[in-house]
Image (cartoon, rainbow, N blue to C red; front, side, top):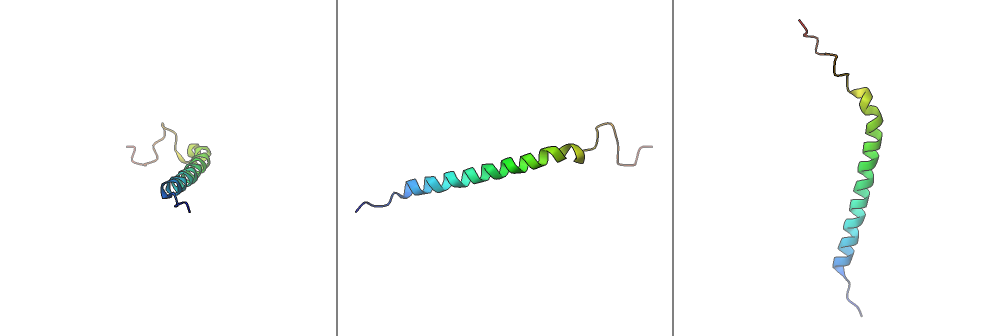
Length: 52
């Protein structure tokens, strides 16, 4: 009977974990990019209110 190859199984788990993490990051970046322009104020405006 062949013995289990734990190194192969570990590598497969790590690859699956990395793939899932990359997908999550890509999804997060895709949702953040369109809203990023709305959240950041224009560079010329000062919203601090202390402009004396």
